[in-house]
Amino acid sequence: MAATVDNLSSHYSYRVIRGFVDANGVQVSFDTVGVIRHIDISDDWTQIIVDWEQDGKTQKLVFPMNAADGPRNNHMRTYFEKGELSLPPREPKSIPEPAAEPAPETPQADPSLDRFGGTHPQEEVMLGPLKVACGCDPVFHRPVWPAVHTSVNACLRCGAVTVTRQIGDDGRFTGDAWTAYWTVPTPQAIADWLGHFPRVAVDHAGARWRWPMSAEHARYPILVYPADTRVSDKVELDALEARLGQEQANQPRAVRLGSACGNIPAVPQGVPEALSAFVLARHALYMRSGSDLDMLKAHANLRSASTELAAHLLLLRPDAYGIMMEWLASSDENTFSAGIAMLRDSRSIFTGPDDPRLAPEILRIMNGLSLEPTDKVPGRTASWYRFEAFLVAIADLGANSAAMLDGLSALMNKVRTKDSVVFDAIRIVINELNGVDNRPPQYR
Image 1 (cartoon, rainbow, N blue to C red):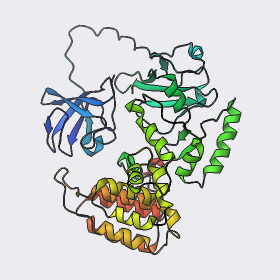
Image 2 (cartoon, rainbow, N blue to C red; image 1 turned 90 degrees about the horizontal axis):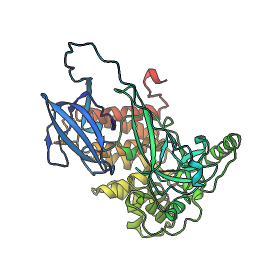
Image 3 (cartoon, rainbow, N blue to C red; image 1 turned 90 degrees about the vertical axis):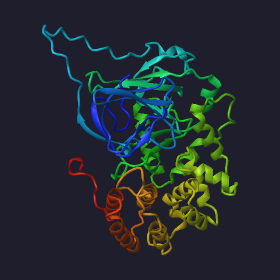
Image 4 (cartoon, rainbow, N blue to C red; image 1 turned 135 degrees about the vertical axis):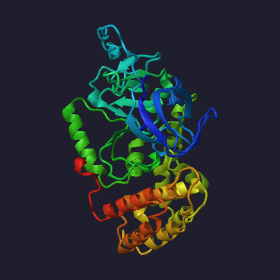
């Protein structure tokens, strides 16, 4: 498979902008320049494998997909700066070029998906471009919440639920772009349990235009469908989505998700690790604002499938404001992450964007962040991640009081010579709070 991971593509040169050590102990220093000749994903989807060429010699770099640090899925831009296309040299030919080989055929779906009758296939089945093993029009197919790397999708027409893995080629160098899905054999009891979770539609084009950021900080608009939603045709689907859009327009995401879940049964035996996010989400749905504080904090972590549910419960507590401010100032990364999850959805504990408590305390914490350079990436501060987290939360809140805008302007000048990326992020947030369209001209 010719894979593309974040900004990494085969046959492009890359400059390393943050030194790293791969899973096999291969050390690559800052400012190293090389060419990626091939990218692949391991069969168990746990590792990214890169053939890295320097001075005509190729070495293999291996990166765990879900590592906590270092190059990994959704974080490659932090380590690699993309350069120019660098195709490998072709050997001169003294004979005419042979006729081009026909492009490989795009995998086709099994034509008899109706034979499963809404049950989950117990063998690997090629679905082609379909995500659900049913004979319905794919216009009715939707992802099941929460999102996981091994995807779970359902049909709004017949109710079938299917666990799949994705394969494909972006066609950049082969001229044959395709994406296809294979079913992942899953016991029917587990597939039935997954069917109790809500379906979602994610608008990836609907998020605010900001900057390339950590995956846990990016949020896209969603429409949530209750798990028992069924429609018979496209007209009924359009009417349903229009109604849900109106109902959910002013609802917090946690309320949309929680109200769509209903009564999810106990976790069945044998749920694989690849689907553990569903177990986590189910636990969060049965917590309350008075639940154990440490448990709520763990669930609220931005990288948790249950982050929005737990943050909503924390914000219902009478001591929510004090907890949030204490966590935002914490040096512990997991505690800070839970504080950010609360902050970005904290409208309920403020009187509005002009609440006099908001700007002074947030700006005090931000101004106290270290501006010392990190030894991993020249030109970046050690606190870049925390700056980004605060800025995204402030923008999500729409905290556009004069005190906040003035404080951010002063902070921008403070970091100008310390971290140009943070400097630019502050500028973008100030523009957004002032109603300025940040999109480049070609996207307006």
